[in-house]
Image 1 (cartoon, rainbow, N blue to C red):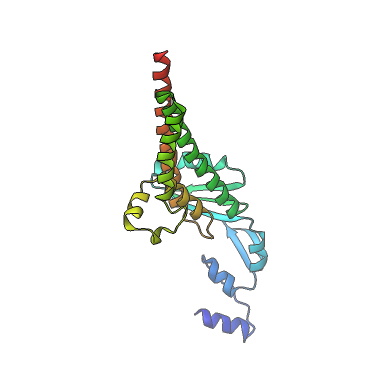
Image 2: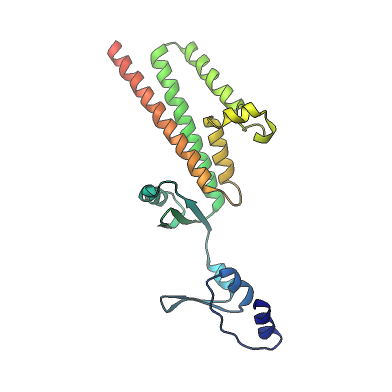
Length: 221
């Protein structure tokens, strides 16, 4: 049918009025478009003109918990450069000035969560051990293995299977996965948000442990 439409409009020189919900078809078949919303034309022009009016990149995320839509909506509104945030059921959509900038923001945010977790854990150990050498040794004992048991230096499919299994529970790997995925051309934002949520939970847990250690230290003096 589409070939016949192309033939009639091209070879026969006929003007054809076509209605469709598929933007790909409209882009391929029409010389001029009109977008109608509730019986009113809201945009009109050639396909290239209309596409040129679109600013930024689109982001779509599928939420695991539909009850969290309000929290996700509020959180995205606080991020600079993101607008048109809408939630329909489990699907959250937004636009951003630059998808790569959003990816960089994700990378920085996840790195900050990882750094906050390790800092809180280090502070807790310092309050309990009260020796600089012990804290330095313990921090290196934790951080260096976590770094090398991740894909930070080597692709995950190139490392032994047991390292791949351990990396699933490694917060450094969560940070690497979220950052790399967010910086790709077509990010899987569901994966990014899941890793960011794990890092946020870890940061909360480490902060709680550091707070408990601080209270124990207060009681001891």
